[in-house]
Length: 346
Ligand code: NAD
Ligand code: UDP
Image 1 (cartoon, rainbow, N blue to C red):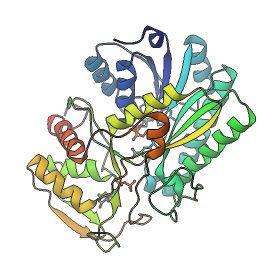
Image 2: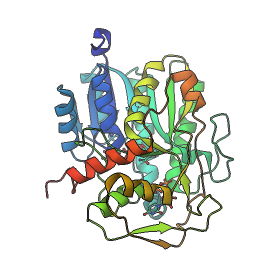
Image 3: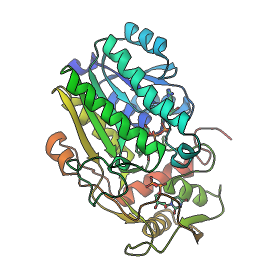
């Protein structure tokens, strides 16, 4: 049964219609919170939120708006008694960020600044921020640990995450009312186990799993594997893939842990590294579909291998990934097979 105390707590989820935000909104509702989503829908569909409501059997409040719009935020905070904010809204395509740095710094950095200014004016000081393993930078030793200094990420996308982390740390140092969790995600994949919600990228997927899933469902011909000459077990890059529902539950834990003054960084990963070829093989086994592929050149900026040391999130938040690679792949495939065109009906 949901805790009645929590039911009075409204959480603002910026970017809540997106991939991780929609799964987290579901986890919040299931934990008994009320949810207000602010999303511009620049990279999402409102259908994702309809499915959240369908699955949970409760409604949420949706506001279509931009996180850079201070008037919109002020209106939202004066209308809703917000307990804490989970800030997902942002742009996330690494290559696009290299081509359009201004758009990325504007949305990701300015958007976060505007949000914090509006929160401060409304006396809301609890924030969970979507950061990324990229903030460790290209030269960090593996596994990544929170105690390590931030590096200097190669892309404007990565730099925007590192900048916002620094802004939030400075804010916490200047004003002890702030309590901030910096959640550094590794590689989120998977989908809600119902098959009703999942990742629905626009255009050609940049990320490995959506690309493989679209090949499996017949929307794309062949996967391109970006390099097989890395110093890894099979020559392809290795990453720490984490199930999106594990991530969603990590946000609920981080939210519940907020309260102490200051900013706290946590890795959200499994601690296991999986190669591109191993992922292709697992997908073939789980789905029964062949994934034709070609090995092409390395993608600029890719690191050979990185993974998390997730100990701190376990020790301090009581969070640990519960789902394994087969679960991640099975749930991705269930979603993609049932929704070949994602949330659009075509
Ligand atoms: P997503 O694109 O699915 O979700 C982002 C959401 O933000 C979308 O719904 C989009 O419409 C919304 N949005 C974008 N700009 C906005 C603006 N100016 N105002 C209001 N809404 C806006 O991406 P995701 O994978 O769910 O990622 C969520 C967050 O997690 C992002 O900040 C991303 O950088 C971060 N992150 C993602 C990954 C990943 O691999 N998916 C890894 C590390 C960090
Ligand atoms: N990758 C690939 N082909 C693709 C997309 C990705 O070989 O079409 C590889 C990429 O080189 C990286 C891994 O898959 O080693 C994960 O890439 P993704 O873009 O999903 O995540 P990243 O770790 O780069 O954020």
